[in-house]
Image (cartoon, rainbow, N blue to C red; front, side, top):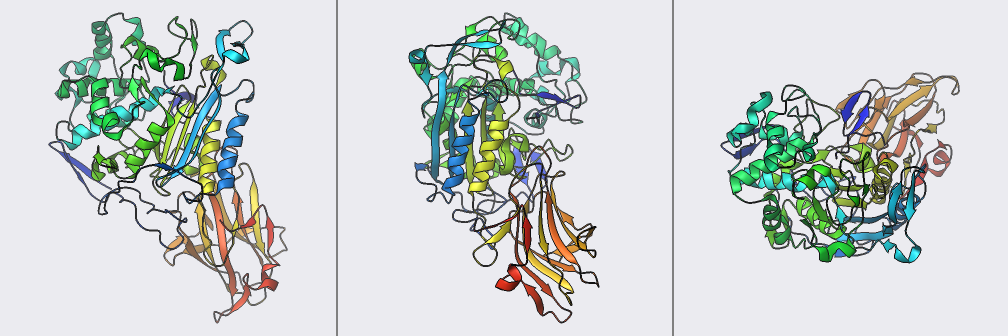
Length: 602
């Protein structure tokens, strides 16, 4: 089962709720963003990294994880506390049913895991009563509480492991990114699929529809016949359409070229080298007491009648495939996923182990879907998706979600990582909707990363509220000819923006004020938004000839937000370049009117 949702009539992973050349399997990369570096001006505090993330031209790290305080991780503890508090709220009706019966939350930065918190129950219900739309709750003494080490069915987060295995084979020259799938699986070309490439499988641009009920075929041969004969929903490379079939096809390629099963590849190439000892397909019966339950799987809401599922894969197709599938079936715990996150943020290494080169990690963090704005995608990893990454989303932020309630987010710009593992289909899949808990957790972790003021001890901060307008107004000053200040912004692209405006009639009407940033980027409409690199920018704006009110106005829509906007060092200069207003002077600073903005040291 995928986590697609219909929005505006189009199937999309965004639920409500540069160049590269592959030659002979060797990937040549040009102008691909680089790896972690020391923080520069306007950096985001201890442990800050280059906004471009892991990659070329810099030494790869081998950082390993340790538990530690928020302060040791360079994070603000109050916001991590709120992450847990808000997550616990989703154990209650949200809005009708609990979003999950329980969850394990893990957040960290650099080599420090600063938060690892279980909440709620791993097993709360014995069944689902469809007549009353209620869960049949176990007696309190029989419920199983979540623990830090609870193991979850990752659902589609499994796709990341299959993708890593594929990129390993690309790195080794056994698989070519731009090769046609039929070069490895000749039978795949049935139904007009002969032009689909390996890259299109990894970026969900093959043209496959989201899924087909392979589980209705009782034999492996029958399931293969369905896949070989499947016709595409559209020509390859012309649209983004998230599909389980892409990763199932990739599994078949990997098993063909390596002569090993996907479960063996997972163990030998990823989990054993990295010490991820609680990550595998088909967990043994001895693991079952420590595994979170999923769904009371019965017709008609499930494709199969299985009762309460626990310790076996939830996805019907993966179950029919013996629990080992390219799109679903991996079970894991939060700490193991944090190790995987740290490995990728390190550029492919963890301690003494290396599973990928930094160049290969770059492929996973580089957008191959520039032709499909809003559906940014590296090899296997989704990029820049606010619908579950929240304010952690940047052009290089990578992650994935799983239908069972799982998610992993890696932000190379701040070297931060977030794991949210919930059992949100327990007792039934219809109880959960959207990704509100994931977004809330990501917003809090993003806010926990400090933004140091450009000058002095504090800067003006817009906050991170949705569906709001915040204004920061400077009073009229005679003789002012130019505004100068520092500006830091990270907003939801295409939706939220910050605008510079003036009013000559005391605030009755406002008009835009064009400005430049860093002396070279012009903003003639007087607005900026989206991604700015999470660094401070110098603003300069010529002012109207008559005395006027000036203001920064930050507006957000009802859905998602970025990290927000900071303004610092507000000054008005006369024609000779002398300050006639400087917020650093107490008398001037006291005249600034803040509505929704607040002074912040971080």
